[in-house]
Amino acid sequence: MNQPSDPKLSLAEFVPLLALMVSLVALSIDAMLPVLPHIGSDLKVGTENDQQLVVSALLLGLGFGQLLFGPLSDSLGRKRTIYLGYVAFVLGCVLSIIATNFEVMLIGRVLQGIGAASPRIVSIAVVRDQYEGREMARIMSFIMGVFIIVPALAPAVGQVIVMLTHWRGIFVVFLLLACITWTWFALRQPETLPRSARVGFSLSIVWAGVKEACSYRQTLGYTIVAGLIFAAFIAYLSSAQQIFSGIYGVTTTFPLYFAALAISMGVSTIANAMLVERLGMRFLSGYALAMVTVISIGFFVHASLVGGTPGFWATMAYFAVIFFLFGFLFGNLNALAMVPLGHIAGVGAAVVGSISTLISVPFGATLGLMYNGTVLPLVGGFALFGLLAALLMIWIERGRAATSGAT
Image 1 (cartoon, rainbow, N blue to C red):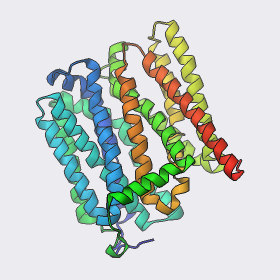
Image 2: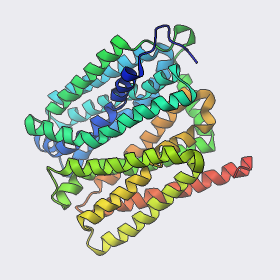
Image 3: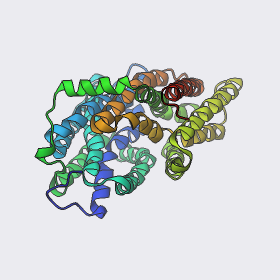
Image 4: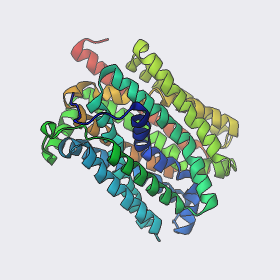
């Protein structure tokens, strides 16, 4: 483990600083949801569904950014790499603020995604540089505990901003938050990767990491599984505002219902942390995938029988259960994909995160764009992606058992 030359920050400062940095991605997605109709109207978006691309564009940038900044931080150091990310994010915010057409807006969102990838992924390396084992797990639990709050509160933040100012004001808030955390990090957090521990950066190193990661059945398989599940979640994020307002007439109270569903996922994330050592990642993931598939098929049949628009509380209950199950999937699937990559953990994490995101964005965006005034496309997509993911997991585990004799 590399020790920084300067003293560590106290946990009372270190945890909220990194939590805010990691949360930049979630805030940049979820706070946008209430303002999508305003952006679509002002920038004369072709169809209502096209406004969903404001969410997808950021996630596309995030996928590429993770693949770049993870290896780059091993070469330039943690702080310089995070600075580069903030520069890209700020430029993206400026483009979105001054955008007079939808194309410029999307370019700005891609830049924001690329930039936000740096504090998100490099912050984890900063923790790893200073802590290990159970102590690192404890720090990450604190950080994720703060992180869980952001998706619940972000839509309310967006709603308040658009009520008080204009939808462009939300990008001003993003820019200010980025500048505050950037300055805080620059002034207070020491560099955690000494020059002696740095390695040269080249595209060949990144490509070698991609090839090695994809050569493992478990890594490639669980990366695809994670991408399929995240695709379903992206489709929900992209179309949630339309579903709540267009089908159920929920507008001003949308952030409250969105927060309730986000909290259901947060609760299951905590439950997963308590159960995973006793039951195992494979059991919890397999059970959750099976339940997502079965429940989604059942709800799709029910929704079809009532014309695609089931009652509001029935839909809320369905989403609450599904997102509770998702809380047992995201962390476990990424951890399972990383098992064979302990010797290249830094590059491996970047590769797994990037590939799963780049898989999820086109599938999730396509599913979201299929919104037709009913819940059928989204629920059907949940069922299909859940079934494909479950079948792929069976294939992975049969291959693992055949080669290692594991149970």
